[in-house]
Image 1 (cartoon, rainbow over the protein chains, first blue to last red):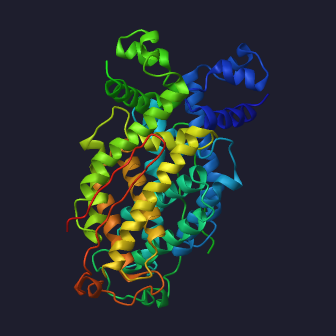
Image 2: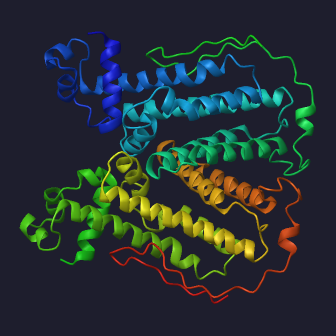
Length: 235
Length: 235
């Protein structure tokens, strides 16, 4: 049995029972192997939790980030990141829903290395979003003083509201609402915070020619486990 | 020992260990009473979970809704609901953070009466927010075609992002970011969705005289347990 298969099953299980519920005994039973056999791959419950967290991050990079980094930098890439993120529960489904939403709630009051790693991953992801917005500003698609950190914070809220509406409320309009909220954020970003409403149509900045896309070589979520995504823009 | 004291402790415990972790044995030990003594107040774990959910809803009504319904209807009340909600973790703290955020993640994939009741409560709260926005539209503070349901959905996202930034990321700017996002939603609501940007300043609608505030008698979150909040506007 490969480590990949073990982690795949561990992640699915963790999405249902939480990282705390992910014991070596339960995972071994789930995989139909002995606990001693599992121990030859994973040394401890703590080690398993950490591996699962980084495995989930690697899947997020593969499904959300990597395809978006094939899109030219700027608003197009911001949109691609958003759409891939929105689509992630379908493109890479887990039985218990988004692993990161559950992990955030589970770990927020549990100090330790696992929480620290989750915070590091989340901050890096928010940073990638903010940097992509800044690239769009550099390309002239947003004003230079756009608040990219507020934007990435707000997009996170759009996605959490989507998860809540889709998973708990089973709202058939959840995705449409998420997209409407995202479009409103883009419209607001085009106006920029320092100049609240200089151009209500939001059209002028789009009419500007975008600057030449600069080649990018981005290492994302790089941690001790070497989870990373290197992508070049070929725009 | 009163039922109030029992539910108070049960809610605090559930905020830390989840509704599923809230067993009669654990709660009895936590209260320092025998399980048989606890059983004279609560008949079953299922019954306890349901009581805790409604108790949390009653606390939300007391701390968030009731004071806001003393404020005149319209944008002022929308703001009061938002500020009271943002302040709830401080005005009525629980050791494990927001009970409803944790319950939503815990119950979203667990069909049953408890999940149904949570969904009912969440929908009612979203409905109260939307109705308050519609009152503001009636008073001329927002355009008549404002998308009140989108607004309440979006405010929910603002609050989930605040919870994430404050509790997990320990972001000192979390509340400031939430308020900035809320102000952007208000500005967007003033412009209304059907007419994306008729008035960039967003000022005209505020200059209109508000219609006479209609008396309100609102029953909120009313369920089998009779959790409700009746309030009259004395504006």
